[in-house]
Length: 178
Image 1 (spheres, rainbow, N blue to C red):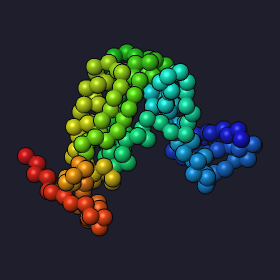
Image 2: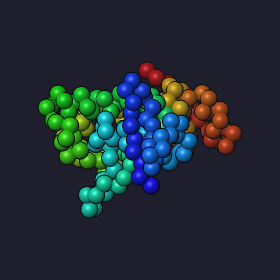
Image 3: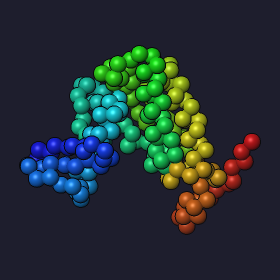
Image 4: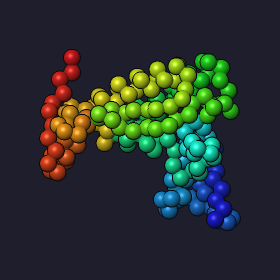
C-alpha cells in the first residue's frame, strides 16, 4: 500500500492519503504510528533507525526515540531533542549531516536511569549525560516527579505509579532529595 503523508499548514496532525483517498482521522494505529514517526524524523533525522551492520534505513515503523521510556519522553524528551538540534546549530553542523555526527547504538533504562550509547561529538554526549542524570528525578512511567525508588530492580516512580505497582508486590523507599 502506498501512503502519502501531508501536514496541512497550521495543523499539528498529519493526514494520510492512501490510493487517492484522504483519511482525516487516522484510525489505523500502524498508519498513525508511521505518520508520526515520519514527521518526527523530518524534524530530527538522527532518530532514524539505521541497521548498524549494513547501514540501511529500517523504515518509519519506529525510531530511537521509541526506546526512551514514555514517562521520560513526557518529562523531558522534546527538550532533549531540541537541545541536540541547538548544539548542532551552534557547532554549524548542517541538518543534512546530523545523522553522520550522531549514531545511536543503544538507548535503554539501566539502574532506573536513562542510558544512551552513541557515537557523537562531546557536546552531544554532554547533553546525554545531563538527561541521564535528570531521568532519576522523573517517573519512567508517567513523567511526574519521582518520589520513590523501588527495591530490587531499581526504578524511580511517582506516588500514583507506586500505588499501582505495589498491587503487583513491588516495594519502594522514599527518595530523600538534598
